[in-house]
Amino acid sequence: MDTSQNNSQDWSQLLALAAANWPPRRWRDVGIVIGCSGGADSVALLRLMADIRVHGDSVPRGFLIAAHFNHRLRGQESDDDQQFVDDLANELGVTFHSARTTSEETSEAALRTERMKFLIETAKTTGARYVAVAHSADDNAETVLHHLFRGTGPAGLAGIGNTRPIDRDLVLMRPLLNASRQHIREALRSISQTWREDSSNSEVHYQRNWIRQQLLPLIETRYPHAVDAINRAIDGQREWRSFVDRRAKEWLDEHHLAITQPGPETRPETKLISLSRDDSTDRVVVVAAMQTLWTEVGWPRGEMNREHWTRLAQTIRSNTLDRYSLPGRVDIDATKSVILLSVQKPDQPPISVQTDNHRVPARRDSGHQ
Image (cartoon, rainbow, N blue to C red):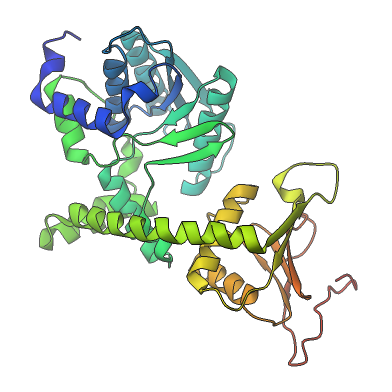
């Protein structure tokens, strides 16, 4: 693609926005894995990173990898997406990595988990420092609506973060998070860059597709600037969340007693965590502390909703003796003064114990506490 095309106003504005969100000096000399499905947003991100990288005062020492995961959901169409990204990477002089699923799972959560696992593994095997993905402002608004309808707490209303650690010495970046989907597409059209349209995006049995294709357009018939308004609300929630997270870290430093390994394994499911009770700290801080703990030990949070976090916080903030399981087979053993958290083995049935008014310690049917 010639230089004159890359000088269009729309594309230049998007270049400036991406560079402001993620200054090139922070990444030009390290490796970056860019998740690219072939859709407009990820194609724009790949082109932007390639363009920004070559403009600077020195020759960049880092590298870019275009990483495509083929879920094989649409037969030849999925294979064509992969070939499109391969061709684009070759045009841009970027290394291309791909993988194909071997799973039959098609849920949104499973697809997202499998895709992220591939991106992380690609980064680790190539020595990359960052994984970059192309979430937009529209994605953020859709995510908040999705969280809201699932019964999220305040943390879920803070939306998607610009950055977060996803593995040891590996950080996830979202340079286009404040760019609208419309702006991204207009910028691509201005440089005559094509992209792939995923036909499954019209299948509204996926919750996010329903929000994107039906709910948000309906809202925008009454509130034309709904996405902007939701993102302004997200900014306010992030400020609040930042304060709560600081308090949560302080709480963990004081009440998180230990993480021990029952066996020789070091997998997340073998960890046994000890917490002291606390009836004086606000519930919202305790919930935030537990969410931080889940992330630190590698336990999945996808199925945890506001009711689950609230129940756990109430257990920590009371002297009630109880024992139960949370999603992900996390065993909450609050039958003593110190609360123990661990992941149950697959052959163990979920625990749900009701204690009586005398606070008799809960026991398993087998007699183990």
